[in-house]
Length: 198
Image (tube, rainbow, N blue to C red; front, side, top):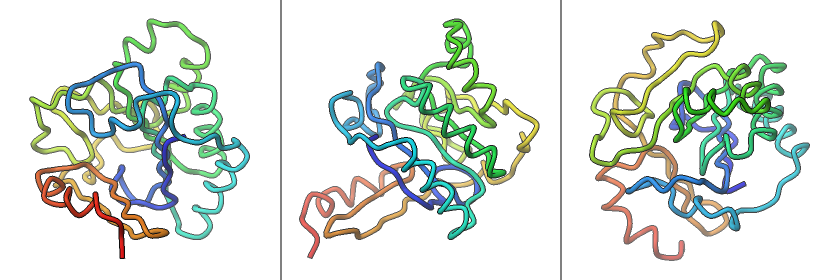
């Protein structure tokens, strides 16, 4: 795993547990998380630890769902499926960001991916295209990407998908963590993010 955030409002509608997977087979120019592309980075975390963290996040912060992003969540479909099924047992919804289209994922006819899609409520699909910034939809990086509702458990017209993107900045253990969709405002922070926290 590359990173995880127990409670965020910048990675999908409502408060969410967000998990960034390490490793992605795609190389979208301008990728928001280039340090998550290699399969050799990140850290190994047991599935039991992640499931426990999701349960704890629901109890302590009232999250309404989980967001799986990366990296590429469908590159580790078994783990993504286990997390999505656990979320469903807790009454939480699942949002997945994938650089592959829904049709590409289905065409693989790979049982773990098919099961993962069945356990997914919202899918943002398609490669990130930095030349097509998304002008209206919140949380979505580029205009070519689609927001697909794959279950009846969430509203396809949820108004929280509209609006401007946000960043969350946290000071944790002497480092600065930033999540959310980067905009021009993040470029202004870059010199500060490169410095050790004091």
